[in-house]
Structure formats: structure tokens, C-alpha cells
Length: 477
Ligand code: NAD
Image 1 (tube, rainbow, N blue to C red):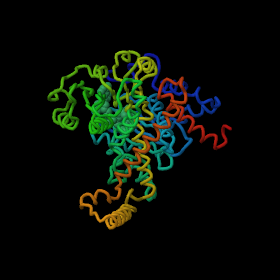
Image 2 (cartoon, helix red, strand yellow):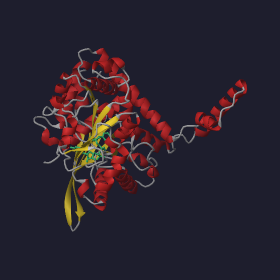
Image 3 (cartoon, rainbow, N blue to C red):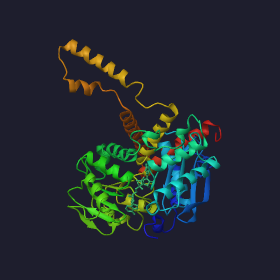
Image 4 (spheres, helix red, strand yellow):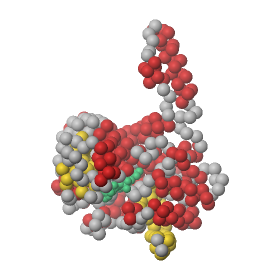
């Protein structure tokens, strides 16, 4: 099937790929076999078939929700709308969510949902009907709730779908005080949080900025430190790809190519991402962007010479079939599962640094966690302390001015004494999370000289943290 991410898999499914990555890391942990098996296994999967009226007839919709791990509750993970959704994919994505949450210290188990539909070929009204009915199915089986399982956006979904889910959930739970925490990625007017929409892409940038700041690590792959002037190729100009491109551009990177479903475009001098988005809105395609060259076969863009390749579309994009032709020094997995284990082997042999999905795209779930906290606390971040902080800073500045006899200008004073708004607190929390998580992964990688991949180090960090939950419960002494 055209563009089916699974069509390229020769031998193993997405879920098997995740299991293979897990097994590779498990040997480094020296944990008991039973405990490793419990961490790895997918706890529950709910498969649904429900009728929805589409036009004059009813269509049977196939949908899923997988909860990979209940070691922490609620479980958490996005909902994907794609014609390629299947049980294996949802289970793989749910498993990645468990490890992702552990890596960034988000106290949730992993989950994922999916509806097998093409959002492009479905009207907004039909999408609303399907989303609401899917939510009812989750409610009926107790698969959704602020303390049970909390969905979020993923491929093919966004704020709008999350607002429908919230509205449906609240209709069935009137008066539930914490009900708004049943889903994240909502519009701000519906209990969402500022910064969630762009969080995954911003997290990709924060992660990369930290990774390229280590001189020795960069020297090992023939790169200089810093993001400035680095050449970047991005696959997928959706939520994650667009914001990753925008923030990387703001850091001084040159986005030299972008690949989409309709083809790819290339400009060695760097594309203007905002202008490209405008062009796509006007023409319906990224192709024929002024100054850029069209590349007819979209996947060929992945093989361009560049410093950083960011796959931000779907899984199984870099496999044993094309890995040997990839020239990027760093592959930054903004999508989930873009590199298969066999593809990874080839890339590692070539000395490529692969930054794993379960770390690099964790910005989305991190800010979803902040949104959930906001919903449970019923107060906007910054509301209680912003003015108090400003008053303290003003007092400090006034004292310094009095002691030094020097006066600050109004603009300068305003900048220094400004208290933090919600967006400042969210972005600061996200930056701290991405930096701290990378330091933990790097420490493990440095400790094991025989550990070839950063993914293995990330898995070890995740497995260790999850194992501690089970051990603390005395289940696996
Ligand atoms: P999206 O639907 O907003 O965008 C995906 C884009 O990729 C679309 O524009 C689509 O046309 C394009 N695309 C699909 N197949 C392609 C191909 N073969 N070549 C080039 N372009 C292609 O989805 P998204 O939310 O940006 O998610 C992208 C990836 O990031 C997924 O793997 C998802 O699981 C992962 N992710 C998303 C989030 C989030 O917060 N949205 C968080 C973590 C991880």
C-alpha cells in the first residue's frame, strides 16, 4: 500500500522492533528475567469495532487503545488517526510511551490509541462523530479518565480532536472535579496549557542543542559544537516536523530540505520555514517553492548530505534497504520508530549518532504532564507568584540602585523584573527535563564502553527506573 510505513518491513513488525531494542538493553541491567518480562509485556489492549454513519450509510470503524504498563497510573499516550493503524503499531507506540515517560520522569505508564481512518478523506463532521463514539467506547470499558488513562494528540490528531474527547467525557461525568485531566493537548480555552502544541518540536531542539554541546562527542562524529550553521533535513512537515524546523531555524540551523507526502524540496542555502508553510497553505503542496529544487521521490531527501536528519513523519523510514545511503552525521528521531534495528546496525557501523525517539520526542508528553497537573490543581501556572516575584525583583533592583547610585532604564528594569508567565514556566520545565534526561542517558552510555548505541543507554535508564517501581512494591525482590 502506498506510504504504508509497515510495507517496508521485511522481517519484523514495529512491536517486534521495540522488543528487539529492549532485549539488547536488558542484558546490561542484570535484572531478573521475570521482572524484565513484566516490564516488556503489553498489559492490555482493547480492540473496538463500532458503527458510524458516513453519508447515507453506516461504516464499521476499527479502533484500538493499548495500555502497555500499569506500573504507574494513569497511563498516557496519544491517539493516532491513520489508515495504517493496526494493533501491532498501537502496542509498539504504547511500549515506547512507557519508556519515554520513565526517561523524562513523567509518572505515567505508557498507552496509545489509534483509529483506522484517513483524516484527509474524512469530513470534520464525520471525524467528530468518530472521535465522540471512540471516546464513549473508552468510557464504557473504563479506558479513559484523569486517574486511569489520558490520551493526547499524535499523528493525524490535534487540539480539535482533544476538545471533542473532553466534551464527550464530561457529558458522561458531569461534576467530576478533575475531569479536565482526562485528556491533554486541549485548546487553552478548554483547560489546555500554553506551549503544548509546539512542545514536541521544541523538545527536539532542546535535546539536540544539549547533545551538540559536548565537544568530545561531536569530535567523534566529525562535527563542531553548537547548532549554528548546521545543515538539517526534515521528513514530515506536520506538528512535530514543523515546530522542530522552526525552532532549529531560530537556533541558526540551515533547513536545507523538507520531505512530505507529495515530494521533497531542497535548497542548500536554507529554506525559510514560515514562508514554506504559507506556500503550502496557498498551493496545497510544498513543491515549487521559490528558490528550491523539487525532488520527485520524497524518500530520496533522506539521503542528502547534511549534519542532522530529522525524521518526523512515521515509523520504518530508515531500514536495511536505505541505511547505507544515509549521509547524515546525526539522526534525530522526532517520529516514533523511524529507524529499524537492522537499519540502526548499518548506521552505527558508519559512525552515525542516532538520538532515540523515546528520549528526543518526549517533549510532548512532558508538557502534557504539566497540563494534567494544571487541570488537577485548577490554576494557571504563574498566576499565584508572578506579581509577588515582580515585587521582590523590583525591591532588589531599587536597593541595588540606591546602593550604587545608578538608575536602570525603564525597559531594562522591566526585563529584569518580569515575573514568569505560564509559557515561561512550561518552556523552562521542558528545557530542564530534556537536559537532565540526556545527562542521565549520556552517563550510562559513558559507563559502558561496549554499549554501541544511545538507544540502548536510553532503554537501560528506562528499564532501571521502571524496575524500581516493581521492586518498591516488593513484587520482584
Ligand atoms: P502530523 O499528522 O501532525 O504530521 C505528520 C506529517 O508527516 C504530515 O504532514 C504527513 O503528511 C507527513 N508524512 C507522512 N508520511 C510521510 C512520508 N512517508 N514522507 C514524508 N512526509 C510524510 O503528526 P505529528 O503529530 O507531527 O507526528 C509525527 C510523528 O511524531 C509520529 O511518529 C508521532 O507518533 C510522533 N510524535 C508526535 C507527538 C505529538 O505531540 N504530536 C509527540 C511525540 C511523538
